[in-house]
Image (cartoon, rainbow, N blue to C red):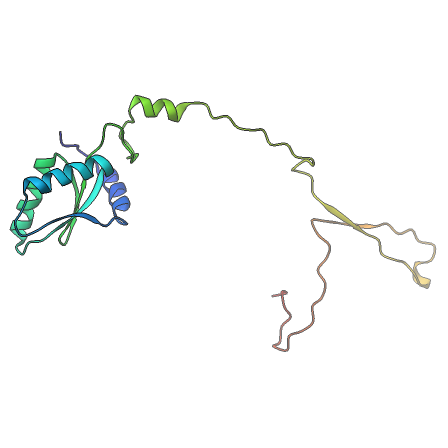
Length: 173
């Protein structure tokens, strides 16, 4: 049975097939029983395969593609030059194609509750770190006045860095 795929599914499979290398090569002799057996085996194993076709005429190439897809009952994903990409879904699919339902066994595994360990932290996550910096007060203008420590959130103030000789200071751009 030939599978009918929509454009999103074909696009997804083309993306997956991009990194694949051709597994089977069909020569000038055409499709023989040995080639069909090899295609059946590789489609059972991988579901998505690339095939290299050796022929000179474009009409001959299209005829060869149609005979291959009919003989192995696979869906043609794309043809680029002399390379054909085929997809045939297995009974237990390895490639999760979006929009195609999963078999019940895989669906149960996917929906099974996941046991997660509760992470515990010694410090609360939302508490901000603060640094207190007390400035020494001295001199005649500060006598008799109360001074309070200044509190900076997150980090202490940045120090001035020496110039590099290029007209700007490091890190202050």
